[in-house]
Length: 145
Image (cartoon, rainbow, N blue to C red; front, top):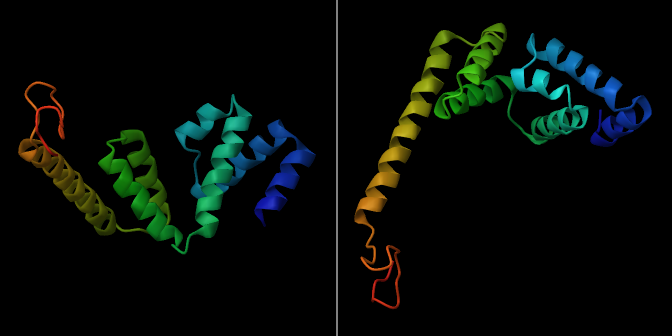
């Protein structure tokens, strides 16, 4: 089904019915409905645009659903969203993704977060800052960033 087909269906069926059908499709595909989608049901326009956006990303991606779910686990772990992480782990297990594969992406996410913290902190440590202005690259006091 194309994006245009999705839009036509929404226009014909209306926002409320389309949102309800989209929630059913998510339930069918994932075995559950993510918290944020349930929350957004009170604002069907937001829910529909969120789901259309997600679908557009998936349809234009060359990644298989297993890879997408593993990325979702890694990102959920990296941003420390326990609700997202728990849901994506449940979905992954229903897809047949092993505990070892899940652990591997969580370790990778943790490693990247660690590197990000260190890179940010060390850059700040090495950065020259004008004592007067408290900014880098101060032309007035002669500091080039």
